[in-house]
Image (cartoon, rainbow, N blue to C red):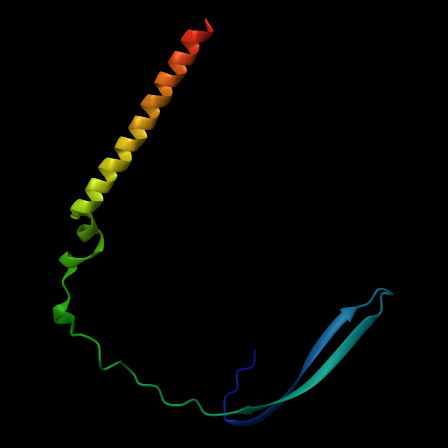
Length: 101
């Protein structure tokens, strides 16, 4: 990582040091040059944000989801399906056990 402090040309080198299969230490050096430009000025805060006075916590979030009738209808249907499958399997197993005896 290169972190320049002033704009302009910056030179440096990357050095890789490793041990080869014979046990000798090898070094590979690569020179580089970077041209650093000044960062363009950034806007501090966006101007198109809605004012904080329009915020209403009751219209969304977890409370809004829990008040949704479709959530509760879905949960009842899913739980009903699970209970139905469990009862069906128990009756099927009981019927199979009765036929084997």
